[in-house]
Length: 225
Image (cartoon, helix red, strand yellow):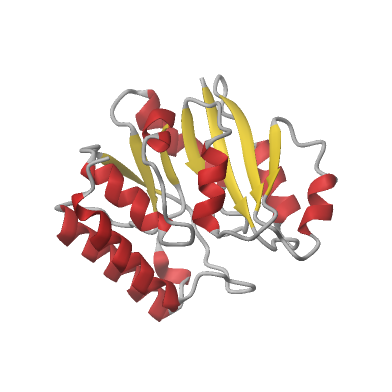
């Protein structure tokens, strides 16, 4: 059994070495790990730092020549994963890789094929927390779901589920697309609590990303891929 950790990266020089080490330090025996990292045309010192990470085991680095966005990086990574389970990991330090075990446990037990990590949004600014709750509510209303956190980065799923989503969204609206298509396919999304601490230095997601997210939720509500 292998876990593929997809890591989209764009201008994360301050955190990339630390997050890679944190991921590498996680023990999931007997589950193996691989990291499929996509450098989405970083313009800071990230590419240089990545060249020094040869001590990180099972690390695949793929480079985009043109910046495409988080969704584009996830699409690229999905073409290179070899694990039985896939999880998305942001390259900052908001999420704790030590939560991997609880995220993949329901999949390993055969209870579900998809697990989301539910955040405590107490460390977010009020308008970001409000936006997160609103898009989750919109998801539940449009898809008849009962999710607590649609926008969470920590989405774990069986590889056949992930690769069957035929992702199109290239930026942060990919979170809505993933969720919409999973629900349209009839999969049950299990949720587990995770550790989370919001960051604001060089934060790329903004309230302006809420509109594309809502458009994606509406667009895929009748998807039948």
